[in-house]
Length: 524
Image 1 (cartoon, one colour):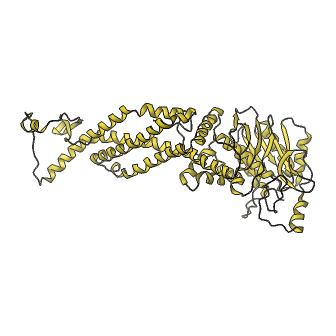
Image 2: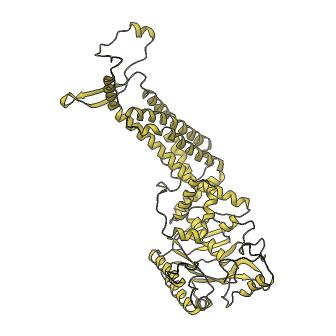
Image 3: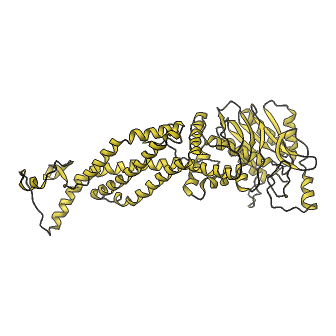
């Protein structure tokens, strides 16, 4: 039996190695907040969430397959959670019978396997009941196939045969074993037979004709004889005990995989419930094949900021279809870094088959998502800041592939304006030429204005909006790069207004709302 609730034709691989840039992605996109919300303190849900989000699907059909299953989960959360809990309960109950499987005696293995299978039969019946009662409420291909499999493989005839075999394996009438004499008159080729005894009433048992047999009885204190007889019995039971143990392991593996695959959807349900509580919108994205150059959205916001903050996060609208390069400039603390995080988060969530934090979102799939964010100064002084940036860029270049996405945040600003701009221009140009989608947040005016002056048809230039009175709307709009990032606004607020540095500058209840000043990735 297979669940196939994460992929059409294979199990979800929880042991799959994460991408080499897992740590950078998690740090730069603040993904820990996302994972922790999905897990709600459950370590197993946390592990599955991390693996699923960072192991991107690269095929639109596979993404839609998982999306449709998630839509069913959102329509039937209580049913999905009950199936998940049933799988978890089965695994926990199996642990109580584990002692027999570690034994070296076939009799103990057989007894433990019979008890485990009896328990599993009860759990499978509950699962079949769920399929009978609720299958009609699910529309996705994945759940339709899952419930059809349960009805076909777990029919009444199947349960009747299993229970009959388990009853027989209690050996209440004794164990019938045959063997042959081998070299040195040693017993070989042990075979366990089904009991031939038939039910008799008490009259037949007393007066009925008995078949002649050769038999013997062990003396009460014959310990060696008892040990020899037990050894013969174990050798006869060995094949059956192993077969039953394998059957129990097979059913256990089904429940383990069912739990693993439903854990992803349980995490998505937890996340969706938290977003609903905060009044934050979510939608199912439209994935397109790699190379179609689609990327447009309405109301896209930073999901991790929304989850960790108390105020409503401002969303952004951008149409970057047929664009390969997006350069974001503008006012300090205007929401540029937050916008960049939202792009990366939405792309990973899309390719995990999840909903995304937006009113609408459409994007082509990427081979991989990479980030190049500025880092703190090396306290060990092993290298300069620019050396460290170039070293990380070299690592990315070794692993990035065409049709990937790379997010730059204030990169190459550790040197002077001219050198930094030239480095950024050459690297961004080479990446775009190879088919990599580039998003670049920068204060390097020479770089941004130089790229703008080329009037590239495949580039779009965004600017963090600032109103004439200095108010930030925390939205990005299309616009020509400006020479200033309005650092004087920060000076006015910090040194003249005495504002408190305890709020996130990327949050606003209304467009134009200006919260107390705070240090951020946009501040210089």
